[in-house]
Length: 199
Image (cartoon, rainbow, N blue to C red):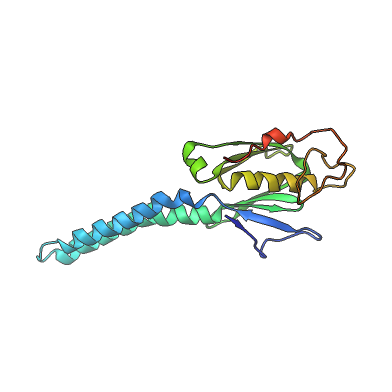
């Protein structure tokens, strides 16, 4: 999903472009586990024989179901929500961590290229893996299950193209939203073929 969030700390003159999380189809299994565990535990609790241990058995069933839901439904959702990539007019920020927040900031002028790959299932959801190569110590940044992969690639390319002064801005990065500073230039430091069209 692409979301605009005013809570992102921005530098002076910096603008927020988008906040990105993995495609929500990654939460399909946690949702299935939640539904299945709730249904099975309710059925088992209802079939417990009416004996002296009935209350204890129901508590055991409920505790087991709760542990399963917390581990394989709630925790995956919290991890998904806490892990985000933020693109601004100057930086690419990575934020993750449920209880303790950790992050990484990469200036856009250190981005040198990108590549994309997708499986058949990801093609169905217009998602895929986006790898952004940088000249920073962080190395490559990999965004798994990137939603709207083709659109995100174009926005990142446009932001990189306009991240620095015209004299040092790569002329190969163009976008209708961000006209190139020198349309006549034939240099392609960021090859367009690294942004394949979505099918």
